[in-house]
Length: 247
Image (cartoon, rainbow, N blue to C red):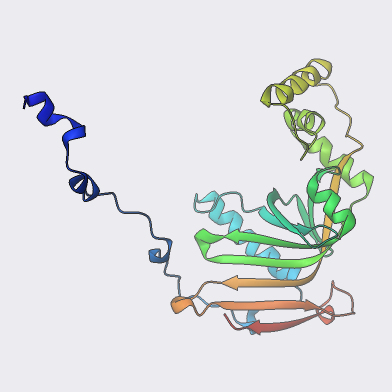
């Protein structure tokens, strides 16, 4: 037998190949994160969830400025179609007030079509680096056209063109189609020229029915305090009850 033949992979023992060491496969069950001990007490919370959201959002902004948290206004929006089939995606919250949370989208997108058929919606702010989550359930309705146009005017020029270029959620032949549409719009509306707000694009306001504030705690005994809407004015404490959920 020649040296070449001896070194040939074909001559290697199948059993030896089968027992060759392999890299360890990742094990999700082995991942462990220990949360801090700072808690969330009922007596410390204000009367309405939007007041509490304002407190936590300010702290999330501070964490973002410190490089701890990325995009604190990013939230997962979950919708369902008329048959109850769910879908989720991440969008950016662009405003909040005593009435709820606002985001903007193409009204012909999947999320908007599902909201037209079923206005029930859930939001999730996943602030994992600070061991916090905010979970909202409620109903969505379109904001007024004036509010949409005012926000559209505040967007960067490129983002304004993008709202026109993208037929959101539709199937396209390739990236070239999208880039070509954007280039055509950029030639039509150069930097500095006002871009009209698309008629098929605008905002939704999610009016909450429940708002849960989740704080990670040691030993998986997390704090979960949930505001539940009553029939009273949601802008006052009388409009909400506060309850603690078992983790």
